[in-house]
Every structure is written in C-alpha cells, then in structure tokens.
Length: 512
Image (cartoon, rainbow, N blue to C red; front, side, top):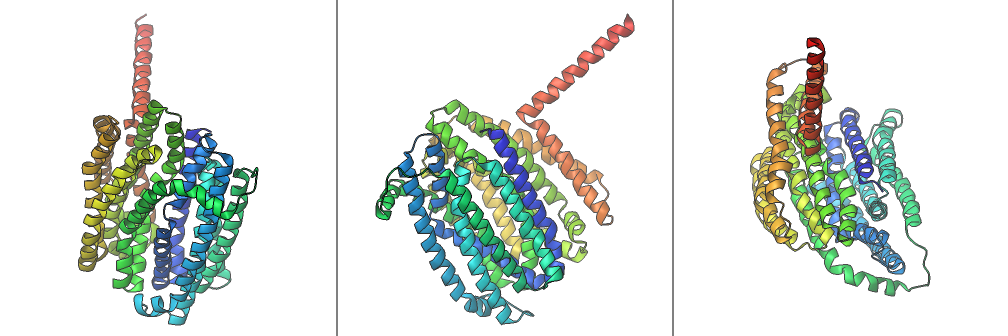
C-alpha cells in the first residue's frame, strides 16, 4: 500500500472536512444565532472530554491491527483482542453516555450561562448530545481497525461523504424543517447511527474469521499483555485532552454562551492548522510500526524526516497566514467586521500554537512505532504541570486571548526543550538535521515570505478583496514552503540548471 497515496488521500479528506466545516459555520450562526452556536462548541468540547475514557485502546487497536497485517500477531489472538475491545467500548458507551444524559439538567441550569434559549431546550439538546457522543465513541473503535489496516483511501472517502451529509445536509434541515438547535442535534444523531453501522460492516471484513471458538474471558486474557502499552497511550491521550480542552471547559463556565460561541468560532479556524497533522499521523503510525517490526531503521528515519518536512511546509504556511491575516480572514468569511475584530485576537495565538504543535507531535510517532512511550509520558507530565495552572489563571484573568498565548508559549517550549531529549533517548541522531534542515530551513523562509507578502497586499477592501488577499498570502507561503523542502529544493535547482543549459544552447546558436 502506497504511503504517498495514503497521505494524499488523508490530506484531501481532512482538508475537505476542515474546509466544509469552516465554510458552513457562518450559516449556522445565521440560522441558530451566537448563543445556540455556543452549544455546538460545547458539544465539540464534551465529545473530546469523553475520549478520556478511551484508555489508549483505540490507538492500541490500530497498532495491533498493523502488526497483524505485518504477520507479527496471530490471527486468533487478534480477533480475540478485537472482540474484547468491542465489549469494553460498549460498556463505556452505555455508562458514559448514560451519565451525560442524566447530567443534562445540571449542566443546563448550573454550568452554562444561558440568556435567551429556554432551559428545557438546552437540556433536551444536551441529552441528544449524550447519545451522539456514545455512538461516535463506538465508531472510533471500528475506525481504528480501518486505519491500522492502512485502508486510508476508503476511510478518507467515507469520512468526506459523512462530513458532507453532516455539515451541509443539516443546512437543509435548518432551512426547510426547523431552524432550532434541537433539530440540529436530532439530525446529527441520525447521521451518527448511519456512520456507526457502515464502519462496523467495513471493519468486520478486515478481521479474520476465527479458527476455533474462544470465550469472552479468554479474549480478555489476550488484552492483558498489551495493557502496559495501552495505559501509556491512555495517559498520553488524557494529557492531550487536558492540554487542548481545559481552556474550552473553563471558558464555557466563565463566558456567556453567546461569547463562547465567538470563541469557538476562532478556535475552529485555528484548528485548521491541526488538521495538517491528522492525515499524516493516520498514515505514518501504521507504516512506522510496520517498518520497526521489520527492523528497517533506515526506512523508518527516512519516512520520519520526509513527513516532518511536509508537515512543516504546510502547517507553517497555514499558521503564518492565519496569524498575519486573522481579522481579514474572519471578515471575508463571515462578512461581519465586529465579529472579526472580536475573534481575531484569539485566532492569532491559537493558530501559531497549533502550527508548532503539529511539528512537536513527531517524536511521539517514533516512540509509538518502537512501543516505548516512557519519555513521552515524562514529557507530558512536565507539560501538563506547567500548562494547566497557567491556562486556568490566564483564562480567568484574560479570557480566550490569555489562554491562547499560554498555549503558544508552552508548545514552543515543549518543541525546543523536550524533543531533543527524546531523540537522544531513542538513540536516533536526528537533532541537528531535524531542527535545522527539516524545520528551520522551511519555517523561516515561510515566515519571511508571509510578512513580506502581507505588507505588500492592500490593507482594506470588501469581502471579495479580503478573501483574495488571504488566498494570495497562503499561496505565496505554500510555494515558498514547498520549494524549501529537500525534494522541492532539488526540483528548483534542477529547473534552474535546465534554464542555464537552455540559455547556453541559445547563446551558442546565436553566436553560430
């Protein structure tokens, strides 16, 4: 299976999902209003916190699926492992979803700051959210099987189709059925049911047929040897949720629901940068796990470095564009200058912080492939000990802007101070070439090009002019980023050499 094809498919799908989710947000605001849209943001945050219950099982399943496909795991053991996880996930879905359903009343009355929406409507919306969260939780299990099988082209196509129905189809419901937050979430519940059914059917075809019957208890016995690695991933996932969602949880309690909707909008746009790393990790994790199982260390490092350059080129371009053109972009997107002025200060630090985080995630990919997450666990403990108190303080004192700058600074510190220690611990001599060639040699030219291009563009204009300015800024930075990669620079030099050769041939012909 081609890694390049898998990455391309994942990129196209993730890019499409990101774009369509961003494009449809102004329509949600128009149909639902800022306060109801705040509930949409609260739902996204709630779904992320529910993933604390994953206990590292989904990524472990993806890894074990990759090992099974690489003939490093017995078919019966793998099938038993899948069966045990299905039982665990079902129990968690019932208990976790049930608790969220029962807690809808207290959340509506005591946690959220609601102004205009009736409390009974908010409570009903929260109850439907609980059902959706439980269903999507189960979908994640079966998505891990497809991902670990490197069926990423199919997964990308299916994800794009679901996103179209989820984000665009609901606009038809809001337009022709009912422009209410209750209708919005009932529709999302129906889509979650269909998504789970399709993923279950597809995953079933990737799991081998059993050669002899095993009891459920013996299936759990297969899980035990993988518990240590799974718990390592569980801690990593927990830290990730604490790191990325604590600010949103705190602000959902502090801000009026309408203001929380505007904050959510800015963070959503900044999340477009993080979408850069998602497709690469989906393709990289199973491939690197397989290369490590095959003891192909040279191939492992080569894939690691080439993928780093790819992510730096695109994530640096996206984060620089969003940071330099935050207010222009938000105005072009929504047509609301007041909203753009209010949300752009939050967008700037989150966009830059997400760009750094997309790169800082790479040492984790190496540790995942090697099955040794000790340094990652230590680093995450230090990171969360530093980050959480600062975010609590900054969010309470300065709102979303303060939380954003804490996010930016702590991610920069993690990349520069901790990742070199990880490379040394893994005995991979990468620090100098990775930081100098794979990161700085690409990010610095992108930043310089972005500042120069931003200064050259018109300062103001209507929505179309503003949109064209942002597109030009992003195109310029992407071109510089692509040309700065090893492969891109080789292409530039080859093209320049061909031009010199053509000029020399023309000169000889002219003199002749």
